[in-house]
Image (cartoon, rainbow, N blue to C red; front, side, top):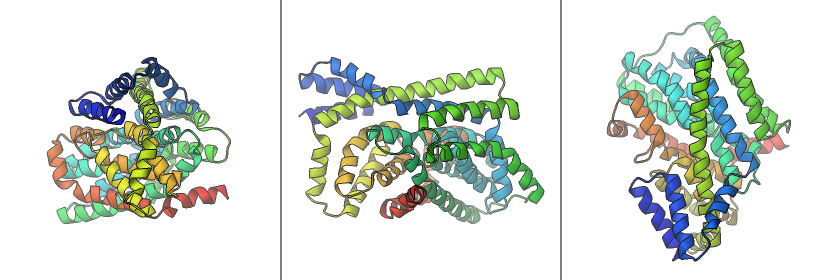
Length: 427
């Protein structure tokens, strides 16, 4: 009965529009009272939920990404992408996809990605004669690449939700090949849609312009190398790399590019603090929810339930993917990771699924929910930028959404795609 109360209260509150963090806390409190456990457990677990040292990396990476976004990095990355792939069919769409890969390595956030790259590229595409739905759809699905590349704070969050025992360096390495695959598949899809609609190409600026834009963008791209190589080589921890990323971002944007003015810096601090507060509040309230899941033995029950009719690893993985896709339609990615990790990770381990591989599947499946109504935050930002309704976007997003689903299934059922690079770097 305790399990029913926990999930029922949470689901009802979500359906009536209560924010996720408050819904988690209220469901946990109702369950504690039903189980006749002291309400002080709520306060204790909320406090413990934000006490993990590795979580410090999340606000620092968010801050570094905000500085890069407002300090001139995004414009230079977009210019480099335009020089490299603008001459392909549907040139500006291809630029948006490749720019998302570049900027994802700076921000680590799909929302920041669609805000920066989409905020620049969607109006440009509309102005150049591209349909608004194409401009929005290609930009929001490309933003999902940011979930997979360093310094993805969702992978850091998964490591913390898994108990902190998973290597963040391995998670970062595991996401690189799927991110590149997602980029290529979306570019092919964008090419096909652009050709069917008769979109043109951009003029090639010449090799000299490509080299100049590459030099201008290198400081931003250098942040990716700094974070990944530093953590992978054991030079510094994820938290230390996040702090270094902030200092590096400040130096590049204020000293080298000289675009981070004092007023912009203050806006950056406020926006990063607001984003951090929202995420950490969700983490804190999800901690008591997760504690109750363990107390009520939900993970063990999930393992037993799946074992009762699913006898193969791939069948179990397929069922988990389907459930994650359904949950992602009405739950944002951070709470999805925090709630589903303690439930499904024990199931995955029971069937011999590598936890690093499972983490990539979880983040990618939840990421597709970000571009799916009714709670698709990336979808809402993209449609607001493009000035179209969610319904208009949904009518034509299916080629890009199916491309993302294809990548998810490839990553899920061919674990070597995500585990090959971490194993190679460890050897």
